[in-house]
Length: 410
Image (cartoon, rainbow, N blue to C red; front, side):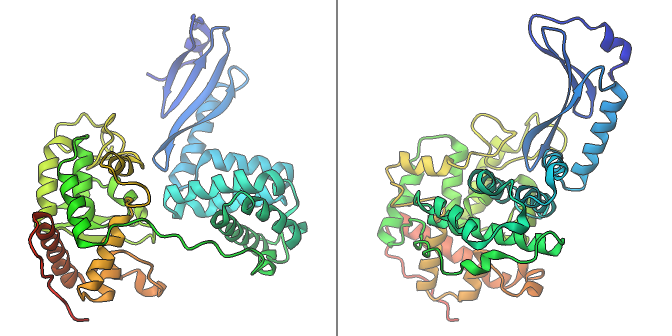
């Protein structure tokens, strides 16, 4: 039940810290020494986070509730209250600093990104840029100063990170120009100043004989059953590893034999349809009794197709597929979770399937921003045929038959 001032004043400390809950994530943390701190717990981007609202009685119960309600409004608007607070503090200290502008830019645009993408950008800013540029007035930063910071990143062998950091800096500087806090973006002057990053390919198995060996190895995998099912499904759907591990049961339509991944979880922020072959449906039907029925989930909580081995309330870890491949004897140089995408792309192209159909099923970037909003169902009939033919082809490889693939002319 909600707290009252009388109850708070009369509470006695204990040997260990304990909490008094008020509602909506707000609680009072009471220390063994008698101190009382307001705390608010919330979730943003699927992660548990928290804010401190001050000490009681300096911050009254009424004030703490007002702070909670204001923070919940920010959360409802798609803003992380913790990041908004950091940006506000920086604004008070100097609204023209690189860090203040960068955090403001991140808070404004990150609600439209995949959560993991936004987290990576923020970590990059905090680790590689803020320590050296954070306090500098953004309007005073010139190309040579920025280059020195980028070369610090490059010096540790992280060429790709250096290029991504420069790209993020360009976005921050352009935002500063648009909001009247800088006159120009100096990253344009650095074009060609950094050596190009080495082209990076995800390790993949594409030789049919070795693909057959991999499929048979997956069938004999002895680990967690949900992980085994994810391994079996990965080559049939060839989505990105993050999209696979965060799949949720309400997205699966058994009657239509398709999986619709919502836009907020896709790299290109566009809904993606994955036609499900008979083989994919069989795997999901086999898994469903374990991860979709009789779970004591909270109302509205995600029902993950591939939950963590430790908790059904979380998806399997980012390393689950990779670790399973290692247990099966495949090194990082031989096969990765992303490798199932390369496998499908290479072999489907070799079999003569339409390039546009393959690219659409891989959910690769749509260059035309107007058509991107409508193309999630593009080439769908042909994609359904392709996905079933692909599953049949893999079955044939696995059984050891001499498979003659069904060629499709563009």
